[in-house]
Image (cartoon, rainbow over all chains, first blue to last red; front, side):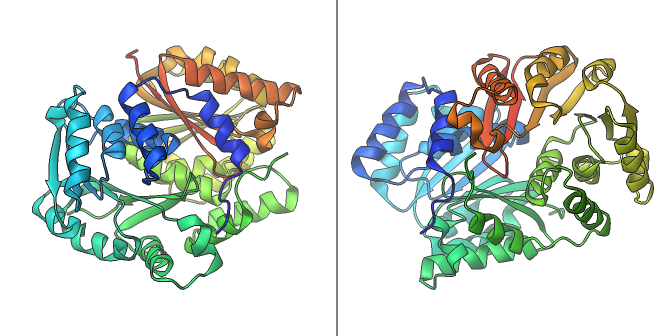
Length: 211
Length: 211
C-alpha cells in the first residue's frame, strides 16, 4: 500500500470546500460509521464538475453502493438527464432510493438490483459510464459495455490506483484486474485515457471513435 | 514543501502513457535541459481530455511559456476552435510559434506578447481560460477576466497547490497569492471549483452563472 496523496494536501483541499448538502453529509456519516467504501467528497466534486462539462443525457453506474456517487452525478444533471444506479445488493439500492426520495432528484434516477454487467447492457447510448464494481471485473465491464457507449462518451473508473498496489506490482486478483484494465484503456485506440491521483485514483477515458 | 503525490504513483501512470508526439517530446527535453517549468505530460493529458469534453471555441492562455500546454490544448481543439497564447517574453512566444509552425495546428493558434492581464481582456466569450502566470497575480487575473468568460466557461489554473506550501501556511507572496485565489474560487457563487492533486495541483472551476 502506498499513500497516494500526502494527507496534508487532502486536508487543505477539504478545508476549501465545506459541504452543506445535508443528504451528502448524512451519507458520509453513514459510510464512516459502517466502514462502507464511498468515493470521498473530493472525488464527488470532480464527478460533479465533469458531469456539468459533459452534460450527459444518460449516466449508467456499475456498482452504486448506497448512492453517494450517484447523488453527485444526479445533482449535476440537467432536468433532461437520467442516471441508472445498479448494485447487486438489494439493501444498497433500497437505501439509495430512500436518499433520492428525500431529495428533488428522484425523477432523474432509475434503481436497479442485479449483476451490473448484465443490467448495464440493457442501455443504449450511454454518455457517461461509471465503474465501481469488484476490481477484478473492470476489464470485463468495459469490454461488455463498450458497444453501448454513445459517441464521445466518458468512462470514469474509481480505485484505478488501488491503494497504490498497482505501482508496487502486487499479484493478487484485484490488483492484477485493475492493472490490466488501466493498460487496456491507455493502449486502446478507442479511448484517450488519464488517471487523476485523487483519493484512490480516478481513471478518466474519453471515447474517440464514433459508435 | 510537500511531496504532493508519491513519486511511485507518477511513475506508474507515466509508464501507462508513453508519448509518441515528437514535438511534445522535444519540448519536454528542452524544458528539462533549461529548467523551464512546464505542466508535465500527465497534466497535459488531463488538459487534452478536458478540452475534448468541453469543446471550446475559444481558449485563452495567460502565461504560455514556450507553448507546451497550448500544444496539448490545440491538439484537442476541433478545427473550428482557436487558442490564444500570451506570454510577456518575446522569446517564449517566438519559440511557441516555431513549434506550432512545425505542426498542423498553426492555424488554430494566435500568438501574443504582452501583459496577460491586459491582453486577455481583449477577448470576449472565452470558453476555456488557462492561468499560469506569476502566482501572486492569480486572483487579479481571474477578477479581471471574469467578465470575458462565456456561459459555462471552464477556468483551469496550474500550480494551485504550489509545492504544497499552501497546506503548510507559508506566508511568502506567491503562496499567499495562490491560497487567496483558491479560497476565492471555492467560495464564489459564480464557480464550482475542484483541485486535482496532479503534479503541482490543477484547479478546475466551472462557471455557474450566465454571462
